[in-house]
Length: 161
Image 1 (spheres, rainbow, N blue to C red):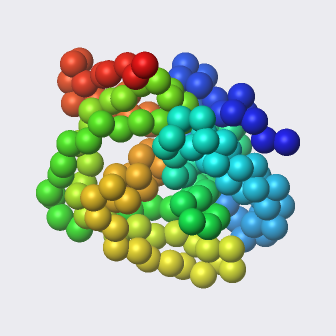
Image 2: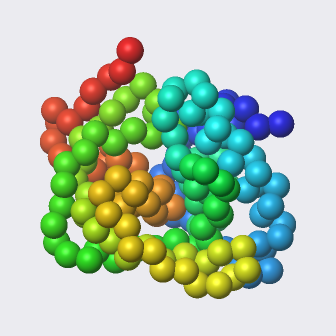
Image 3: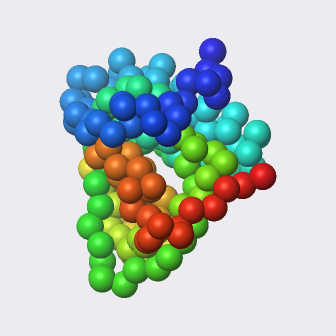
């Protein structure tokens, strides 16, 4: 049964590791992981009032998998993105691995987001603003990069109460 303590917290060395690609023959065996991740998003949202997606590395599964759970569960296998322009914006980023900390980062305003779905079909989404930021955040997790490493400067941290 999924519980919030399954989420790795800031300082855990696994959060800084690069994930390996998911192979097509691994999709079915990752279903229990997908279910766990989807449940964790809901549990996190219930406790903290935020949370839309989680990277597999945040639960110690070192695969390039993100689960988006806004109005339905959408597993995103081997996601990547390309900026559509150099335009960036600043945002206070939050993370399930440090729920009481916000970090001000710069993200691309518009990206083309590519991933494989459950049927191994390649999908492309044009994302802007908050969804673009979210997917950049999740792709960073898969590369072992936390938003704390992308802070604009040393004053870009804020604790929540």
